Structure formats: C-alpha cells, structure tokens
Image (cartoon, rainbow, N blue to C red):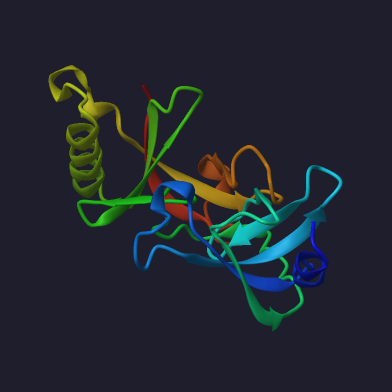
Length: 183
C-alpha cells in the first residue's frame, strides 16, 4: 500500500463506494465510512455504507473506492428495540402500503407489519406475485395477528435484526401488532 493510501485509509474517513458492476455508471457511488483497517488482510479496509448495518471488506486501492476529506468518529449503530421501516438492506419491503419481511431458514414465513388482516393478505399476495409464487397454493387464511418486538443485532451478525412475538409482548416497549404467515 502506498504512503498516500496509508494516509487516506484511516478509521472514520468518509468514502464513496461503487460496486464493481456499477463502475463507469453515473451516480452509482454510495456514501459510507471506514470502520476498521484490515491492512494485514491483503490491504483491505472495512467500510459501512450509510443506512446499512454490516461491513464490506474492500481493498484499500480498489478503483471504486473514493476517499473523501472528512474524517469523523465512527457512529455507533443503534441497538435494542426498534420500529421497522422500509429498507431493502434490512429486509423490510413495502407491499400494498404496508411493510413485509420474509424470515425462516428458507425465507418462507412472512411477517406483515399491520394490524389489519386485509392489508396483510394484500401485501403477502403482492409479494408472492412479484417473486413468482403460485398463489393458488398459499393459504392466506393462516395469517395470524400477534404482538411483536423487533431488536437490532450487533454489527456483522448473520441477520441485522431479530423478532419475538406473543401475547406477552402486548404493551411492551416498541411492541407492534403484526400478522404472521407460516409456510
């Protein structure tokens, strides 16, 4: 690694990252921050893109990495309970006006963030149509309302969040009503 890169590759440096498939395309760079130096691992830096909870390991001299002048403290990730919001990176998709997440080992169970069963059914149906599921074989009548709490997991966990549900969560901090559709 050159001395210029060694001077630029510091924890807290703001960066722009362009995925390899987007190199040369306009307006595809995503802002982020260097969270860790892994220079003994082939000259890599760990980068967290804004709005995400996990790091990318990127060669410090990668052509799609632009070092910005700003160096700041690396912001701590929020932890604890949260209210879901639309975010592809975190696995919450807006369908038919409500949020939907797929969970389970094979992504066959659905969580629909609404207390309205008709909206939950419409969202699950819209998602199934989008991903090519034969809706004739899905029993949307199995949707069941439950109280749930969502909690952030630490950075670089296998999943960015976990969910627990049951009647015992009614009235709990950040508890919301969802509909669960098992496979």
